Length: 64
Image 1 (cartoon, rainbow, N blue to C red):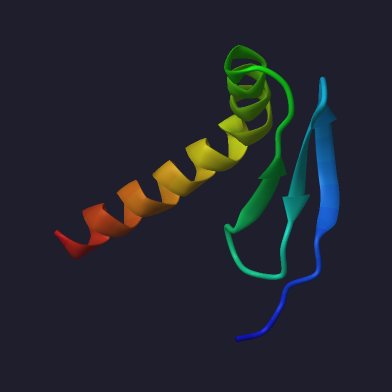
Image 2: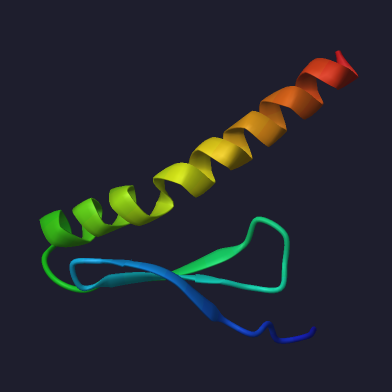
C-alpha cells in the first residue's frame, strides 16, 4: 500500500477537502455539529460527487 500526498483544494466554513494522488479519491476534514458537517460536506463534495456520478453513468451506458 502506498500513501498519497494530500493537497488542499478548498475550504468551506471549518471544513476542508484534500486531493490525493489517486483518481477520484478525496479526503474531507469536517468539524462542528452534525448539521455544520453536513453543510461542509455538501459544499465541498458536490462537484466531485457529480463528476463521479457522470463518469460512472457514462461507463454503464457504454457497457450496455
